[in-house]
Image (cartoon, rainbow, N blue to C red; front, side, top):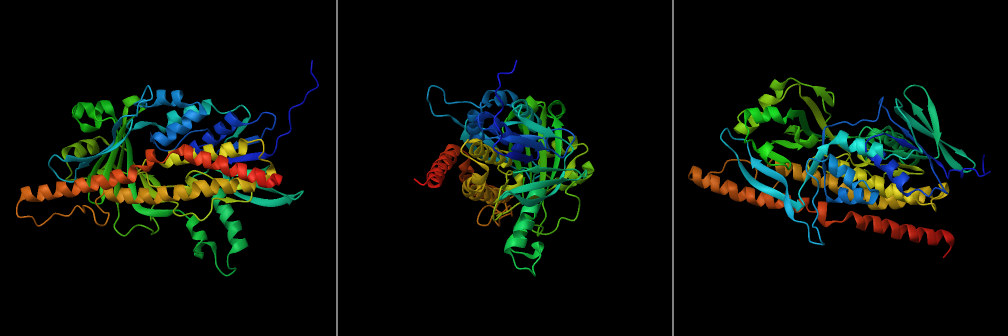
Length: 482
C-alpha cells in the first residue's frame, strides 16, 4: 500500500550526447554524488547500436587513478589492467618506475634504448573495452540509455524565460532537454551547433564560420600524421622472438626514427600487443587529409614504411595483418567549451595526439569535475550557465596545454623538435665518434621528454577539484547576497 509519498521533481532534464568514456564517466559521477532529494533526469544518447568503444589500448596515469579512487572504481579498474597500479604502502612515497621506454630503431642493425620516462608506480595499460565495461556496470539506474541516436544538430528556443533545446537525430526523431553535455568526440555535432549559434551571434555577418578566425578552431585539424593500428597476439610474437623487448618490458615502448615511430604495449592481461605505427608526412600538418580518416589498408603499406628498421620492428610488421589506418586529427586551442546550458567535454573539446596517452584521462577529469558541479543540489537550472563557466575556466586552459604539449613530445619521439637530436648523421671522423655523439644527443632528448611528462604526476588533479569547490562556494555566496 502506498505511503502517499511521491518522488521529488527533477531539477532539470539533462541529455548526454555520446556513450564513450567521457559520457559514461560523467553519468557515473552524477550517480555517485547526486542528492536523491534533488534529482536530475538523465538521458544518454548513443549513435551506435550498443555502448562500445573505438580503439584498443588505453593508458591510465596517476591523475586518472585519483579520479577512480574518488568514484570508488579503483579496485574494479585495477583488476582489468595488465599491471595493477602499485602504491607506496604504509605512507611511503611511491617508487619511480619506467612508464615509457625509448629505442633508436631506424637502422637495419639492432637498435638501442636511449631513455625511460620514470613515473610514480610506472604505467598501467588495458583494453579500452575493459574500462568501458567497468563504467557501464556502475551506471546509475536513473540514467536512461537510448541507442541508435546519432545527433545531427540541436536547436534552441525559450520557454518560461529558460532555454529549451531540441535534439535532432539522424533517424528523424527528436527529443528535448534543458541541459546538453556534448561528449560526442572529435566530430562532435554538439560542438558544430554550438559554434554555428555563436558565430551567428558574435561574428561579422559577411564571414562564414569556416572563414572566421575564432570559429574555425572548432574544426578538426589534421596533424600531418597517420597511425597504422593492429593487435598482435602475444603468443605469435613469442613464437617469432621469445626475447622481444615488447614482450619483456610491460610498459609502453617507442621504437623511434626520423619522422616515424612505433608504439607498442600489452593489453587484455598480456594477451595482445597494441601496435601503432606512426608516420608523419612532411608539410602535412594543417592541410586537408586526402583520404577517409579511418580505413583498412594492406599490410605491405605498413612494411614499406618501416623497411630497413631494426630486426625487432621488422618482426612486428611481419605479424601485422589487416591493419587499419587512422588520420590523426586534433582540436587545437578551442576558444570556448560552454554556451548557455550546453557544455562540451572530452574529445569534443580537446581531441589530442596519443603521444602522452592522455586523451582518455583528460576526458575523465572533465567528466568528474562537471559531474560533481551539476550533482550539487544547489545547482538549479538557472545556475547551470554560471556553473559551466567554473568548469570551463578550470578545465579548458589545462586541456589546451596538454594538447599542445602532446604535439611537442610527439615530434621529439620522431627526432623533429628544434634544438634537440634531429636524426641526421653527423660529420664525425669515425663511426665510433658518430655513435658517441648520437647517444649524447639522445640522452639530452630523453631528459627533455621526461620534463614534458611530469605534469602527469606533479600537478595533482585534486588541486583542480578543490579550486572548483572554492569557486562554487564564492558563486553560492554571491547569489545569496552574502
